[in-house]
Length: 380
Image (cartoon, rainbow, N blue to C red; front, side, top):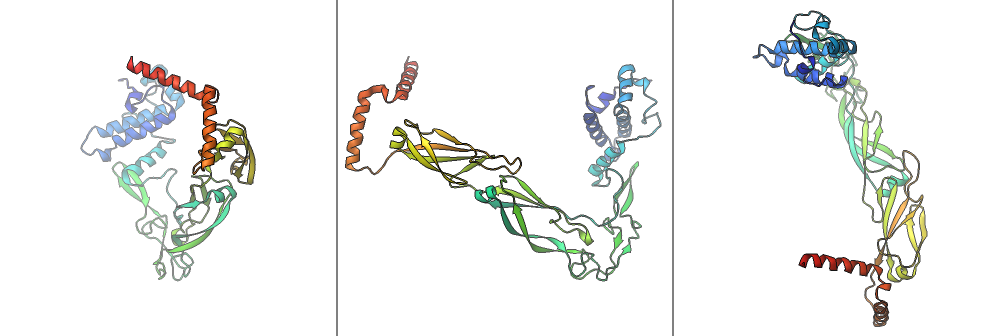
């Protein structure tokens, strides 16, 4: 019997994991499915060959035997061309995925879908909140257009509350269709998978059991939420058709920019302008925090851009309940609109600083040395 390279059939390496084997089988089966290759007489054999390869490689014991002794040792243990037998386990699950791709949803993992009310769709909205509301929490009322259960028929879709079993699918909600060599189940086109027919439909909703309205909802935003967080309101999405359960509502949080603070995780950042004299001589400044103003001691000779850390003055996390820190960066402000007296004082100060040379401006010497070195290299 001719030897077969099962790994080559599926286009994978010998070291492939079970997940990679499963994915490769699905890809190969879709490529060579007979219903997709009506003009290729070899497609069916390649399709069966892929089935055989997967049946062996998905079983660790069979795979080990094949790796050690070759194809002849396992050729009678798998279905496929010339071997008889059938497929078991999760091959059927993969076929369900393949049918869904090929036939538009005909197959389902885990067997046929049972008839009954269908769940409504989930609804996703965005909500913009101020930083203060995101940090402290808030209740917000929203108004959204959605599908709600019809009041006159109580969501049943029937004017008199009566329904009859669908004759097309015999109340199952599924019909079987032949697709080439396979039999595929699909939702019944007459009852749309419900299994029942409404003979006297409600005039208000047209027999659907629901209609579109604007609904007001109260959404509780917990303290500490951040940009991109999502809040789920169970059962507040669209009502299901004909009395089906409602889906969920997902609220995606968008935090608006703030005039003072920038938030990064549980940390807050702000920039504080300070006077020239405070930066030189030192002093105290008042810094805004979530709990009110606090005093920050600025040491003398503070440079512009210096960042101070205020522990525990950040955001209390909605997940861990730990509190972050506040980082305050100072920006030395150059005085403007100077009086004659102020200018005269500054001129005297400038003279004393110039007389001191690099003593009062230690960074200046290093910077100018770097500039001189750069220019020498450019002109040399």
